[in-house]
Amino acid sequence: MSVPANLQNSNSVTKTIASLSPGLKSLLGVEPSNLRAVSEIASNPALLAEVTAALPAIKANASMPAGPEGVMKIISAKFVTYQQPMRNDAEWAQFWSDYYTVLEGLPLSALEAAMAACLADPKIEFLPKPAKIAEMARMTPNRAVRAYDRAKAAIEARPATPVERLSPDKIAEMVAPLANRPRVEPSAADKERVRQQMREYIAADDAKKLAKISASCDMKSTAGTTDETGITPQMRAIIEARNAAQAGPNT
Image (cartoon, rainbow, N blue to C red; front, side, top):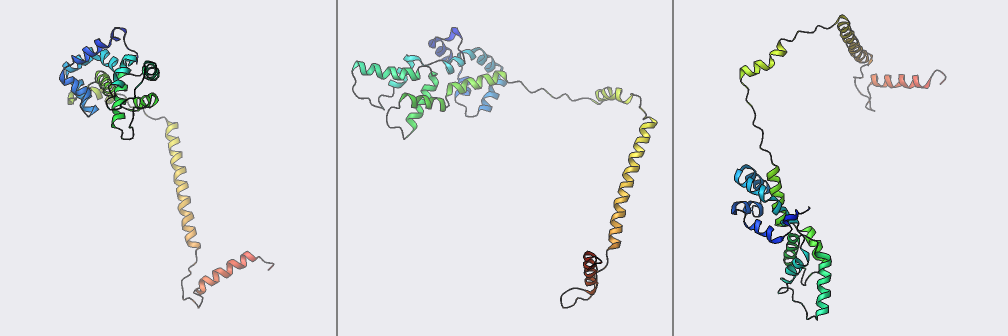
């Protein structure tokens, strides 16, 4: 996200953010539900006008690079928790150079969120290296970005279009052209084509039914008293006839 030139000054951005109304601040940064926050802002003309005017500053607050000053301010604030060894001037210069190189391009809000996440991680006992802080900054959500996302979503939200309830007279007026439209009669060729399709369908259906009836008539009953092998005489006769037919006349 690019930052407007007239908002590059962090003091101007900070002043604009600080001047937001308590209600808007709460919805942008405290309200746990994104949907509710966006809905509340979008449906309130006063809040919507306020957030629209403040959107450039809200955007800048979420995207403005920390710079060397921001890196030093945020990192050194944790020296009470992450105590540092004694260093001479040259060592401190190298220390800050390493942190500036990796972190100064990150948004200030992301850097703040990353350090808060480091403090909350029980596995991190010492001041993290620059690469680890940068990784945490990319992975950790922060309030400034969330505030910008909510503000932008509220401005872009469109109220639902009300459903128009049509009166009976209006409905009659709308369908009148359809009712008065002249009926188009099918041609003789169209009628004959439909008749031929029906004849072909009926003939095919009759053929299927006839085939089923013929198959059922050809089947001989196998009912009867079974012998010691569990086969009825009728079934044995069918089996012998089938075997004879398969063997052929030369057998």
